[in-house]
Length: 245
Image (cartoon, rainbow, N blue to C red):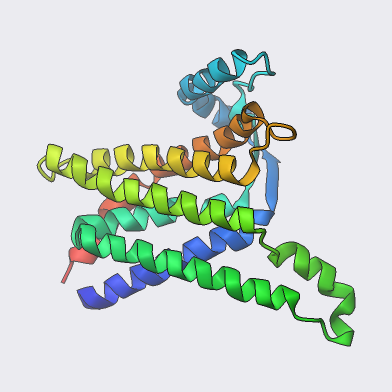
């Protein structure tokens, strides 16, 4: 496989991840993790929980548990988000900033087209034999305008920051330490992604105040950081694969 085909493959995986993050995100998973596995992660991420608790403490709200990893409670859509950032970092390292921005633009267009098509599909009247299943279909594929705006805005801002930060650190490190550039750019970008999406999609002073939104942000952000750290070897493997002739 030549480099052009590799780039196209990464583009396909990138768009797939973006679409799946929005389509699959409606399902929330909830399961327990063995204490021996959860404990080290609880210790590692305790400073982040502490920082969020300081924000919540200022408003007198209930604090977040430091036993965060004992029970996982997140949307399954989060599984594809780290893959998107991994792909843009690989593309930025091998093909540069302009190609990475092209990936982002194609992703935005794909998301807009998806929203239009799913909206039309939901609005079309069901066939007689499908009437009983139509409500379930609508509950899965109905996308509110606010959620759509939140998704597009969060994706655009976080990905553009990721590209800028990756090349900023690349210049500072003289193209060395890929692991450092990958994680520094992704960790901040994931915070932007989670914060922008949650506030734009859910914030309402009467029903969903800022403290409630902060509680929504934390679990997603922690898991995104965890995935970003774990996929560091994949970043090296991906760059090696993309450059290999």
